[in-house]
Length: 175
Image (cartoon, rainbow, N blue to C red; front, side, top):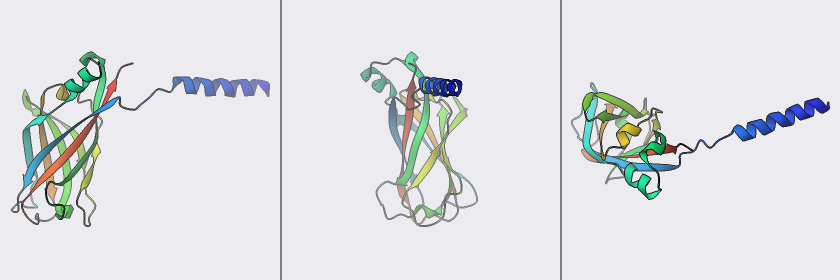
């Protein structure tokens, strides 16, 4: 019985000592705006590309006294799609959303960072996206991003309006 108690205590201590923090040290927030027009159809996917999305990763690294070499990885954390000026727009017409980062040196190379497939029906003024887990530190270490938003629609948009996609990326630092 005593041996079992020591074994159990040893396992608990080893488990607690091996636990490390899995939280990001800080987040980098950015956004992109695009216009959804009234005439978009439901047959094909629609792409919205912004080639000038600002990134503050280098500035935040400097402010926190970290270097680029300290970065273990940068992953997508959360994203929210919503109408920019008119909160009465119902986004129920959107079926699928995919968000990609595009390599400025090779436009054929792109990495999916956020997605939402088969957005649930019903009245909504915002769509919360799911994050993917690839390391995107190479993209965010540049001063500007190329962000591509892909939409598939289930119905026609109710009107022409500006949409905003708020994005947040978690930065993990090597200890």
